[in-house]
Amino acid sequence: MGPLIQSLVTTHKYKVTTGESGQTSTSFSNAGPGGLSVGSRTEIITRRLSNRAVLDALVKLTGGVNFGFDEGQWKAWYASQMTRPGLDARRD
Image (tube, rainbow, N blue to C red; front, side, top):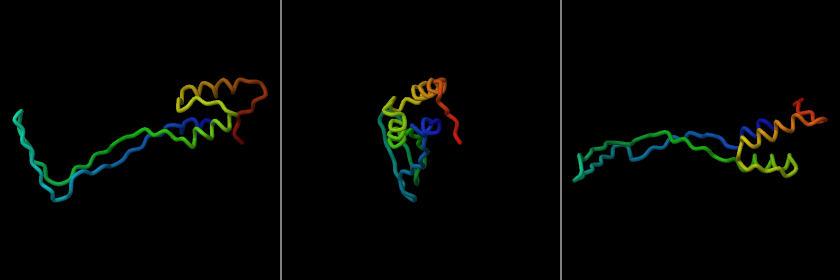
C-alpha cells in the first residue's frame, strides 16, 4: 500500500526546445530595448502528474475507500489501519 500511495502523484521533468537551429529572430518595442535571438532555446519543465491507475488500484484494494489524489489523507488512513487488531501489514 505504501508504494502505491507514494505513486499517486509523480514529478516528471521534460526538456523542451523552442525555435530552430540556425534561426534568427528580432523584436522591437517602443517601451524598451528590442532583442536579437539566434538559434534554439532549451528549458526544463517540471510537471506533477496524477496517476489514475494507481488511484483505481488503491480504491479496489481498500474496498472502496477513496481520498482522491490526496497523499496526506491516504497516509493517515493507512497509518490508522496499521493499529487495528488482526491486521498484518507486513510485506512478505
